[in-house]
Image (cartoon, rainbow, N blue to C red):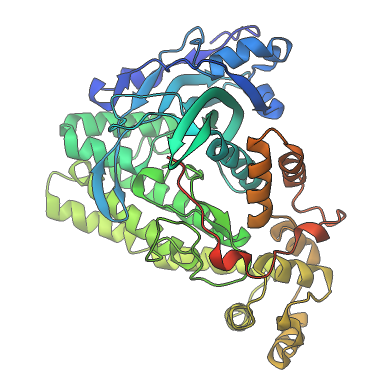
Amino acid sequence: MKINNQSWNFENSYIELPKTLYKKQLPVPVIDPQLVYLNIEQLNELGLNYFVEDKQKLVDYLSGNKVPEGSIPIAQAYAGHQFGNFTMLGDGRAILLGEQINHNNQRYDIQLKGSGQTPFSRNGDGRATLSSMLREYLMSECVYYLGVPSTRSLAVIETGEKVLRGDINSGGILTRISSSHIRVGTFEYVSHFCPKEELDIFIKYVINRHFPEIIESKNLALQLLKVVMNKQIDLIVNWNRIGFIHGVMNTDNMSIVGETIDYGPCAFMNIYNPETVFSSIDRNGRYAFGNQSKIAYWNLSVFAGALLPSISDNREDAIKLAENILSKFPEIYSKKWYKMMFKKLGILNPITDDIKLVDSLLELMKESQADYTNTFAALALDKATKDSLFKLKDFKTWMKTWEGRVESKKTMKNYNPLFIPRNHLVESALKDAVWGNKKQLDELLYLSKNPYSYKNDFDDFQTSPEGFDSTYKTFCGT
């Protein structure tokens, strides 16, 4: 395809799928769109850097007030298990403008989030608060620069309209960029509500678009399950590495390409505790930090169930084949998780006893309520933190054993960030930004670009107010 450097370069491959998978839907215009943030780096990556000269025109596009040339806007249909309960869903407040092809022939979904009602809005207003969109902008950028696969944010627009979410809030629209917006829940929708022929078509579409290396496989659905399982394992291991808690791992929030998506009630863990939950809607700890791998397995089991008709015409055979793939999850996850933890400790050639070294450290951290990020950073820097962990006799014994095993402090510094977006700083920055003062948010975004720079002074950003996290709650924002 020829690239025109002065125009959008859209494809709309999704509309070539059966019409049951989407509804054509124009964004709903807003009264007074104003640009709050624009990600210049992402703009360049998309091949849209010429808009720097005409930001007002870009604002018109990214607010939904004008449809880009070549775009065929749609709302995607999907279903999902939300806290274990199956629900028919779909893009209730998001519009997929299309797939932008950049100068390297890379394909990116461009989606407007908060762009108005769609056929899937389920009596919602289709809008989003400015605060929740700023939160996703910040968190997605932080996760990206921490080296974890993620959707990204191109821009945040303030709409000039008000949104009612308990209180009256300023409205906002986020432009989300991703490899794909196809979810586990998309497969659930196709499997539940479409004929098998359409499931087969959809599977081939997904493989051709995202995993062309397996297109010659004898059993496409089974091979897709295997690839997606490994993508999910890698993602959760990475979340564990940086102390990230997604907060709402419903199947409709799990991307099949292994990118972090839907930054609603997400947060970072400060004090190490596998039971940590910040989401206001997760009252039973289903999506707690330590449960994320278990939920990934649960979601993959749902994904496998959606694929069964295409795995084999004989349901019993299909179940056995899928179970054979899923049965490997615990071992693969455990190996990858320990490999990651060994690198956090600078161990490059692990031995069996190193497993105990990892397990005992985490137990000591939990008992002493040590800060997850700071503990590993301190080990990499050969200095103690103020946490009581470093005063414990058992920890000093652990240190002597570890010092005999550590091989690479450089590896530790590559795997252990010094900077994460601390919860109290995120909330303070968002509160100010909604009122027009972006100083704190600008600083967090700036620092997020170099979270592994051990040359930087992050001292002011490495501690949390005592007791803050014990009452801290994050919200979905819908």
